[in-house]
Image 1 (spheres, one colour):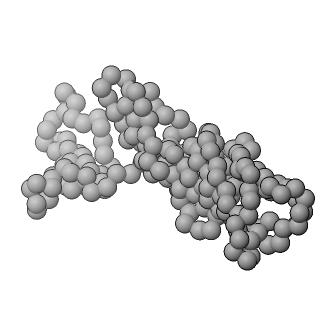
Image 2 (image 1 turned 180 degrees about the vertical axis):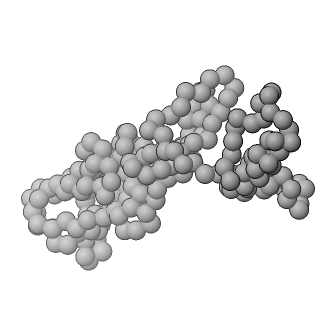
Length: 191
């Protein structure tokens, strides 16, 4: 059984096309049932309401929205499908990837991304560059860092600055003195 959009036409005899029309209604009910409560659902208040919404196409860019219209759609962000809401004046990312691990990130509603992590620092160097597990897709706004030695003494870090969308550069005060097993933790914000 397949849906036939070409029936009935004005010249069709109803008794001839009745089976095709019944097939169409059956197909419409089956297709509608994929995401909705059917029109003959036992709970009248549920009829026609969504049970779920599928987005089989992931857009590469935001659709053009005009006037008072709005849209909910799926768009690729760093190769992962994410859910967005848009109207004529703004686009809001509603979902995001997150990783609650030692070195991770989370995308908040609206597209703000928080990244965190840690790395070890030993030796006589005055700076440490840490690469994020994934880059910020658009902008890197601010970064903070804290260092603690194995003895629990806070280390003197002078600056934490972002290096493009992929790294944080952490500078250590104290010149060329030897540092042994310092853990540097960072927090960065971008979108």
